Length: 106
Image (cartoon, rainbow, N blue to C red; front, top):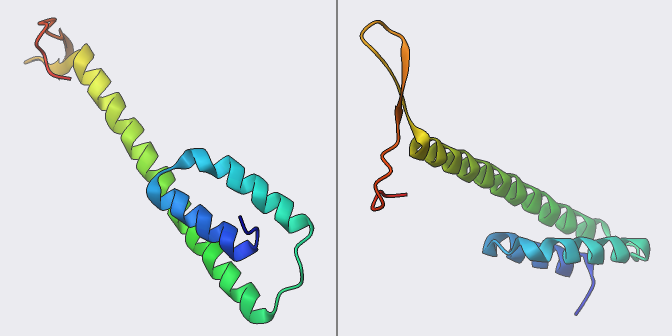
């Protein structure tokens, strides 16, 4: 397993794209360890590594956004299963209980 900066950043990208978030702590540890003894880089190598890191940051932000959207959707589903809040003819809120039928959809 090569611990060069580009190889770790590429492995990180692969893990993010695959949704394998369990690999992230180990990759972060490899990155931290590698940085302590990182050899000097040429300008081109540094720019390539920066591009990889920026791309990974973009992917991580998108992943976090997707996870937040999924959490919101799950909360909406939970709320819908708990009952419905509506308004009566007078404009007052009214809660309708959820049907406890055993065949209801989730």
